[in-house]
Length: 350
Figure 1 (cartoon, rainbow, N blue to C red):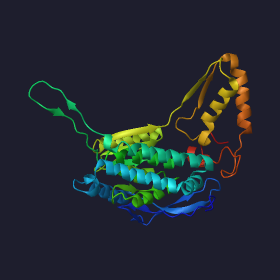
Figure 2: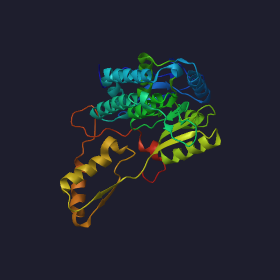
Figure 3: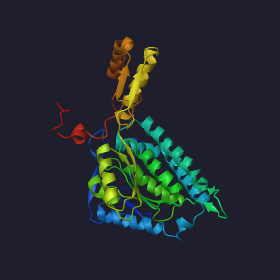
Figure 4: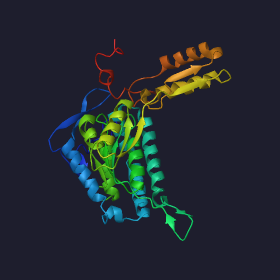
């Protein structure tokens, strides 16, 4: 396989274990960050498609369905099978991740194996989620029983697509929920391939659905949907506020948010300055700096400040930016050009 140009096998919406076109017929381009050229046109989900996907997930969650009737241990077996299939296709998935995100290939391999380990971790939880018996006064028996929430709407960011998909799918499926996953419009390709692997693993129709599209249309349709029981979102604080508002003004659905931040590093004067500088450098530049926990603020004790700054500057100047497939490259392109991130009138642009 040519890891520079992997074949694009899936670019449609995934509902009920089938790939389908958007009902509107619309598509949007997935772009190669290295060249700015189009990789492929992807089916563009909107409210109508999200409605169909949620209906499929709701049907799969009904009492008596194959998914709801499945033993918890059998759910774990399916998740482990999915992890096996991801591992079988790890080279292809890493190539697809690099093509769609621009991150260096070695880092893509690393993230694929994080996804595999995450899925295996949650597979182990499937038959270990249970309630408790509670001692109470009187001739009574009191116990709790934990039930799956229902249909989960999952929206992920573009910086770690395959890992974030695993982190959303793993716990929801382990708990017995069904999922409608919306990948970021910049990086939809690995999520769509994962959907096909889930079908191959044996997940029943409707348990996993993938609706590529834009946030204001597909994303908003999911967060405000009356038949979605929980929404989990990874992305910006600004959009996180919108997600919370949609959830509150619809059916008051449960919400989990993983938002961006400004993570500080504190460097004291008794450190090995060379080691500390390298750690701080990697913390802010890892994954092209596109990381929600990037060490984007560094506080350095005065006694070593000048030395630290000098060594940090040297590391930054010597950082190798270029072809993400080339040996020695430390950093590929950003997922998007800065005009798309900040707006053409941003003061960040000369």
